[in-house]
Amino acid sequence: MKTGILLAAFGSSEPTAHRELTAFEATVREAFPTLPIRWAFTSNIIRHRLADEGKKTDSVRKALLRMWHEKFTHIAVQSLHVVPGKEYTDLAREVTHPGPDNEAFTRVTLGAPLLNTDQDVEKVADAIIAHLPEQRAALETVILMGHGTWHSGDSRYAPLASAVARRDPNILLATMNGARTIHHVLEEFAADPPAKVWLVPLMAVAGAHAIQDMAGDDPESWKSLLASAGISCDPVLKGVAGYPGFAEIWIEHLRRALDELA
Image (cartoon, rainbow, N blue to C red; front, top):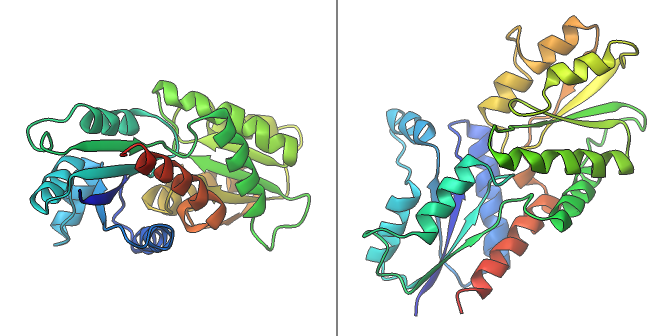
């Protein structure tokens, strides 16, 4: 029996994101010091972009094939997705319905995304409160930026928004896609806008979405839209995988996936 861990993230070509993934891997190594760790990126676009830069990364299928050649028999695949959206669903399909590349494994299990259960929602809400920007004053507004999706997994954001609001009503959640976007927040601000907001990514890493769509200078970035409404912004360019409170939730899911290998 040879057991290994495969960490599966959406991926990013941004150097800041790479550092955050490396830091997360170090946390996983600390939790499971005897187990080898491999990586896969689920985004075809990101893998192709990195390939153009001369950086080799694996899809989930290719990573599993490599591990098969390395004689692994038991593999726990841990998702670094935030919600069980399309990317996670596709990952689950690859893991739970193995094709010829990984049919020789004795067992492959999958760890859940960050916001998988109601209990996860409460834990993530606690982690958000624990890891707010240190410089933020008590009553300053914070807007969390999620990716969002038109998949049913988008429904995980609403209970999280409610759980966070119970802890601090000045923390709001919006997503780039899905049911609640920054435009809904701007409508709510119309009558009584805050003077300043903090923009914080609710994504595993601070990749292109955080750097460009949230904090960039494009007229449609969240920072620019808020500035047009007379609201100053302080963006935080750090993904949640870089904070212990969030990493612990993913590691708890990974531990469960490893237990299921037995």
